[in-house]
Length: 161
Image (cartoon, rainbow, N blue to C red; front, top):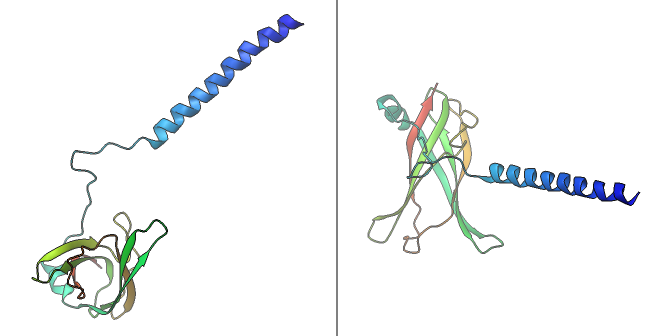
């Protein structure tokens, strides 16, 4: 009977080692970053052709309010809340806004493009003609030499119906 127990131990040990090995391999492949080129991930921005540029004049950004918050790991975030108004006759399917913070010499110290209603991969809820909607933009780091004035915000990309 002792020979039977001794012959089972190596089989159980080998099976356990195989399961652990498979788990390690699965963890490696699940956490391995995907292929990227040398410049990092490519972000596809929305286009702004002539028709979109003309329509962008009918889009109003108003009621800007700024706030700051610090999270538990002492990272500071700056938030801009506002209202986007579609004063035109077409539906806005997706929109990108470019935000520029300036210093005391009116030089741009931060420029970011964000989609206030969606993400890079997925458009948000469309904004019908004649409608208004609140939005929020988030900035992880605003330079210290920013002039403390509201940044300029303008349309940098549109998808219209």
